[in-house]
Image 1 (cartoon, rainbow, N blue to C red):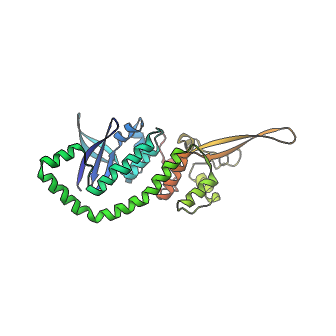
Image 2: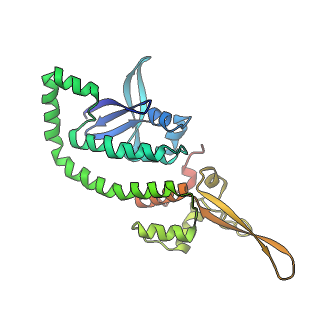
Image 3: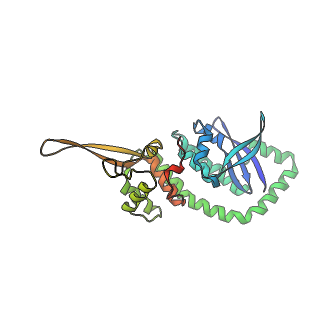
Length: 265
């Protein structure tokens, strides 16, 4: 396994990227700092094991084992941020950092450029690495083509403050290639702990954990009946954050997955 650690700067923040066998892994603590997520350890608990790992890195306090996340894990972290700039950060990573890594085998910071100029061996190393990774490039570009519509979808939803009905979420999933109907979606959301399954007034209402994740909101409507009595109708709607949450998980094959597998923030 070969690895290479490279820092790059987003606004006033340094984000370290570890390239392992040609694949970018992001230092979780750096992402959390950019995205105003206070407790990286709790964020890490929510990320699937195959999307996170550990890497020994030099720090001012000595060598430390840092939690790193894959590209998919990086998207997970961004989705969990309520910071308005999160979408801009994602666009920057996907439009500048990742294409550079995929094309050149590394993000060419000023420090790396200076190293190339002053050390001919660095040019040889980069050329050798490029040659060995050419076979991977076609697959990576194909994956980028798949990821681009997902990123555009996430940007569109992030820019919208409109919540939608669960039936509309089923339509949205079908538009993105996942065949499911409204009734089946309700059934899965109840089974997996996102909606209340108990018959009665809480039927199909969001569970507390789902509300804590800001996946849903409840719309209340006052109804005045012909006999004069008043009742309240409650409708579960999926927030913009919830739309991104469910669509990305369905398309990545991570649903059905019970909400109890998600650690509480």
